[in-house]
Amino acid sequence: MLKQVPVAVLCSGGGTNLQAILDSAAAGAIPSGEVVLVVSDNASAYALERAAKAGVETAVFDRKVISDRREREARILALLQERKIGLVVLAGFMTILSEKFTRAFENRIINVHPSLIPSFCGEGYYGLKVHEAALRRGVKVTGATVHFVNEVCDGGPIILQKAVCVEEGDTPETLQKRVMREAEWQILPAAAELVCKTILDEQER
Ligand code: GAR
Image 1 (cartoon, rainbow, N blue to C red):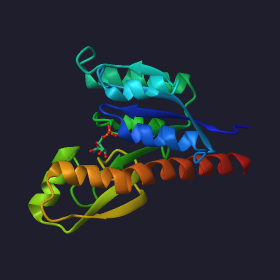
Image 2 (cartoon, protein in one colour):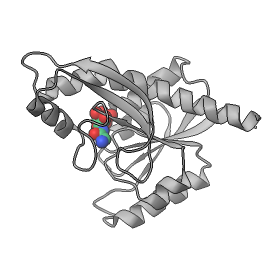
Image 3 (tube, helix red, strand yellow):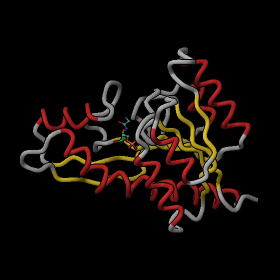
């Protein structure tokens, strides 16, 4: 019987969401899971340094080195299965996963997206582009969503959402920062705990 679900976090960049998970875990707020692996498709991702500082094992499958998306994905999948990962967290991971991958971890992959899905989501909406689109449309409220990942980009069942106000004079950068601070860094660790707890509860049945 597992006491904690082994968690892998997949990142491509700065890794502030990874940091939020590591900090929450250190504070005892993710008792049902343990981050055992951080995977990046970008060798220069700062997320890798954050993982190393926290003493978490890292693995790199660099986009520039393994340019074939299918091959990269197959190697990541093999590693996750070898390590018996129970939950995969996409935290700013910029490769869209194939159906083969999402099926292998059905209901075991969650993603954080920087808008209130179904607004400003799907292919082409990532990072700053999401906030540029929100400002262009003139919405007064935006936010973040954590959802399960299936074969439809940003289309899986929603787990948690949090709204954030757009302020007068916001730029994509100021809005991104506020959405991260007020929403993403809170709901991603909370959702990770929620899903890990459900996995543990299911194994007891
Ligand atoms: C976050 O804002 C995350 O929501 C977004 O990329 C950023 C990564 O920042 N993800 C997407 O846009 C996915 N469609 P981080 O590396 O500092 O966590």
